[in-house]
Structures are given as structure tokens and as C-alpha cells.
Image (cartoon, rainbow, N blue to C red):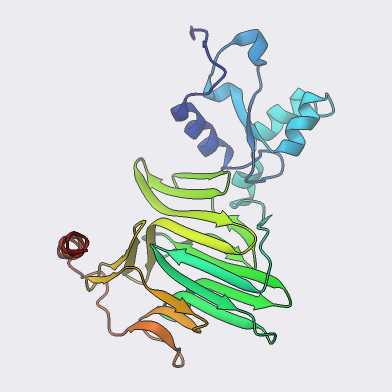
Length: 281
């Protein structure tokens, strides 16, 4: 028999189990902004059991609280969550705007300003695939991002500020302004901080594409394939930032790495080199 809980705070392992079971979004509509909802009323049971907890967005949570959403409907949605049924989250609009934009990746800053004719910048591109891109036009700041897993499968897209993610990753959380994807316990695939109206920060994680690995730390970037260490760099109004691999046409950027080895880079040596660089700063 489950022991009564002494706090309304749901233990973190139970929260994660609920997120995974519910597809990382409201079980009714798939919205990635959600609350943990006890299907068995907390005031009556005073316990935290994963099977008795679901995810509801603020809208559907208010409907349930106000008696407009029947408990039976919540239970039915919990048994067949929207995101698991669709295989991806419901698109969520990020609220970016303005004529200037800043993207920070591992302490490196990429900024651009719209001169009135529309401006595009690609802070990170691998093999002709923009992993992070910015478009500024008519007062709109449009963010574009794609995150791949180790199998070269996209697990997250931001298309012109529309956030959509797969339900395949081990864990996904959007808490406040921070979006975190985890590959497994203690292993972050990527962590973003969204700072509307015009700033995005990639705090830590890995950008992966076609055997290239770009490690992101809070203060630096490390391309493990060839031990390229980048820290404290700034690029302004460049069409490209860090360009790795082949491109269909030349793209100007602050750094281009051609002919990088794939899958065969000495990762341990790269990490040792990174440590040396940090110690020398």
C-alpha cells in the first residue's frame, strides 16, 4: 500500500515517469506547457503515484478544476495521449520579434540586424544543413533549429518559431524559458534558453549531423572530430557562423571547417585538448 505523501511536491523521478508516459505534453492537446494533474484528487488520497498523475495544459487544467472537463475525459486522454498518438508534440509558437537578434552558442555570440531588406544568418551549418538559423524581416525574428540524434534522425524542429519535438527522446522538459532534451539519465542532448523578444542561448549539449559532433559547453564549443576549440568569438551580420563540411555554394562565415573526419575522430584526445585550452585561459 502506498504511504501518504507529506508534501504536494511530486518527486522528480515520478514527474519524469509521467512525462514519458504522456508524451511530454498535455494528454488532450499535446501542448508542451503543462501542469501535473492528480487524477485521484490530492486532497482525498495524499499520495504521488505515477499511474494516477497526468499532464494537462493550463487551459485544460482550468477546465477540469472548474468542472467543465469531466474526469472521465481526462482518464480517456491519459490512456491515449495526444503526442504519442501523433508521434510528435503539438506545434508551439515562440514569441520572438524585432529587427535585431542574438544567438549564443557555448559562450560564442552570433548577432544580426535587419537593414530593411530582410536578413538571414546561419550560426551553425553542417553539410549544407542549417542546424541553427535566423531570419529577420519586417520586424519579425524567425528562429529555425533542427536537432538530430546519434542515428541522424531529427528529434526537434523549430520552423519559423514553431516548436515541434518527437516523442522518441528519453526526456523532454520545457520549464520556464528553458527547454531540455535528455538522451538518458544525466546526459543532455541539448539545452536552450529562450529569451524573448530577440535572444536565444544554447547552454550545453551536442549538435550531431552525419558523424560530426559539436559539443556545446557554457563557455565554449568543441568539434570533437578534429579538436577544434572555439570560445569567446563574436560574429555580426555574417551570413554564416560556424560552417562544417560541404556546402552547395560558398557561404561566408567566421569559421569554415572542410574535410572533417566522420565518426572516426579521437574524442578522448579532443576532450584532453579542450581541458588544456580551458586551463590556459
